[in-house]
Length: 194
Image (cartoon, rainbow, N blue to C red; front, side, top):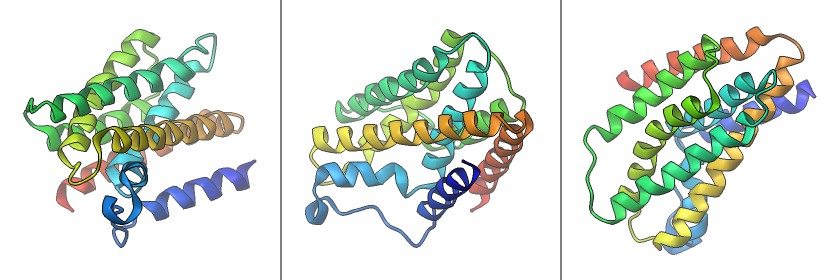
């Protein structure tokens, strides 16, 4: 199990490498361009996996609904942010809010904050609104519906990877997730200067 989790982490880290670029919708289609979008940005990967890790931390007890409710709130609110961008509604501070989401979610995982599921869903929803808006602003020549479906699927898969990682490492020690959360927050800070 640990080997699989390490392999998953290595794949996610490799996907964040700056040598990769987003897929061109004209060459690969809008669905694949949307699917690839969250997989080729360190900020996206860190946040999506952190949401899954945090949901797993909250669920360690009797709050098992956090495993689906918190990630679903992220995906749903991200879709709303995407639609706002497509509708021409601007949001202030989109990029700073995305960086704040990396740091903030990393800190929530690092400190193992256990909010009620609805409050945790609201927190991730605020961050998701900005992520979705950014996706809508970066649409380019891709078809909106296909692009949106693609990035929502990729986001859900990254959440699932975070949940699997969180549940898997919880068997060994709850502190491993906290270390990953601290690393996420530090990487978020490094993105400010990168």
